[in-house]
Image (cartoon, rainbow, N blue to C red):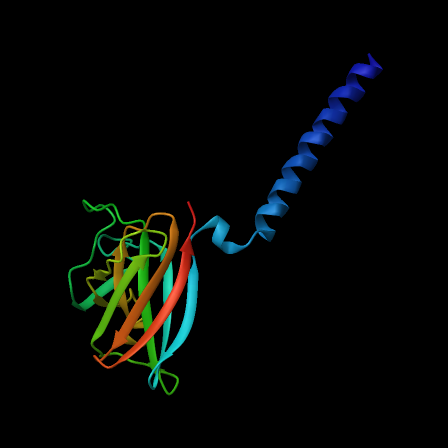
Length: 168
């Protein structure tokens, strides 16, 4: 009887230690393996451009994360393209966010044999409830796993180029 109790207690400790190890490992893994959170910064003339690729975000409803200010219509998470990412550019000049600019974003899958660029319909938006100081440009988009190149042009003359990978 004592042997049976010790076996159950040992299996309980094994289960507990395994769960604890998995929890610690998930905290130590790079963020990109847990969710697509890509952030790269480059210069485009006198502008600083930070391209972010995040999980798709909502524009409608009581839990809307983004408020559309201008530009193209937002690609809704529930839309026909089933966007899975939010590709946006934060533009700043002299350390201050640029609240009004003509921003164009295009991207292509580098691992594809096609050399076609996709133009992202650009929405000017800000974080709901946070005001124009959080202004950024982009949209929700469907990205399959692979290695991408993106170009962000500001006011038609300055362009920043980025490369990033999307995990499966």
